[in-house]
Structure formats: structure tokens, C-alpha cells
Length: 255
Image (cartoon, one colour):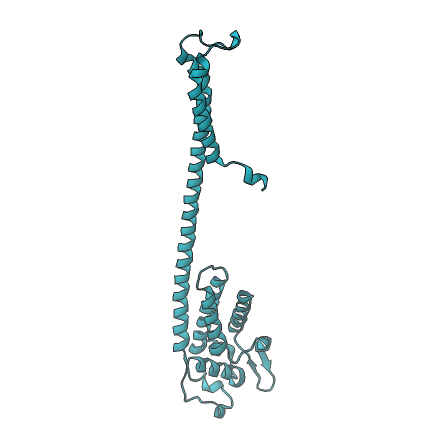
């Protein structure tokens, strides 16, 4: 048994002090009224016995009272700390629950936006090899993203500002910004549904939005000037950087 285990805690000390004090008070009248062996310890002629007993036992009683007061104050401090810790834990739990609720709402909006996304064609005046495209078919959901990326990468031959002003491209940019925001908040969140949201967002990104964009293709998606058609090719820079940011965050969260 180690030394710490042998030490008495505060309740045990208080108990023994009370026992000792009680014994001192109980035996004092007897001890102080009998005739002593030497005159120096003879208190039978020193006045009223109550004064004698009170004067002798008072230090013991004061010591016990001081110790009990100290123990009571220490217990109160510990109780206050426990209550404060519980309050802090409650605040953290409420914050995490609120964060989880906000993230769920953001993901619901993101999911609805992805499922409602529709795409038919980029401006036909700037498309080449139109005969290989289904420009009369309106795609939705994951198919719409796939078709739009295919047209941007392989068939669009026009100014970048026209491409960026195209409504489906602007909508894609908005969806990617929302997804990037959710991932950024998940990086700094301790909410209980963090793992589920990451899995769902990764599925949405890899199997609906970026099915035609692999990580190793990011550098190849930079806008470059094609000498054959005399037009720039590639994703708008803001979209390309958002795609890379989302991919990096997914990897960072899962590590």
C-alpha cells in the first residue's frame, strides 16, 4: 500500500478530531478535580472548576471549529466548481447541438440544390461538334453536372466571360461555395453528426458533381489558349479553385 493510500482524507480527520475533542472535554472535569501528585499540577484550588475547564478546553474546541469551518468552505468551493463545470458542459453541448442543426439545414439546402440542378446546353453559338451532344435533352441532378463539365472541357469554344455568365455555370459556382462552406465548418466542429455529413458530402461531390473531374486533372483544368481553335479552354478559375479546395478539405477531414 502506498503512502497516499495510508493518508486520512478530510472527513476521517474531522471525525478523529471530534472524538479526541469529545474525550478531552469528557475527561477534563475528572482529571482537573483530583488531587495532583505535585502542587504545580493541582488545579483543585484555582477557583471555579468551570473556568479552569473552559480555559483548558477552549483551544481544542476552537481548533476543531476552525478545522470544520475550513472543511465546510473547501467542500463549498468544490461544489461550486462542480456546478460551474456542469454549466460549461451544458453550454458546449448546446453550442454543438446548435451547430449540428445549422449544418443539417445547410446540407439539406445543398442536397435540394444538387437534385434540382438542371442543364441542357451552353450557348450553342460557341459549341463545336454539336452533333455529338444531346442539346435537346434536359439533364437533371448528377447527369446535369456531368454533361455540363463535358461541354465545358471538350466542346465550348468561346470567351470565358460568356461561359461565366451562363446561368447553369453560375448555379454550379453557388453550389460549390455552399459545399466548401459546410466542409470548412466541419473542420472546426465537434458536432455528433460530423462523420455522417462528411460521408454524404463526399458522395455528392464525387458521384454527382465531379464524376468527370479527377484529382489528377485539376492542374489540367487551368484555362489555356488553344492554337487550333484560337479559343481558351478549361474551367473558370473560381470554379477550378473551389473544386480543388473541396477535394483538399475532404482529404484533410478524413485524415
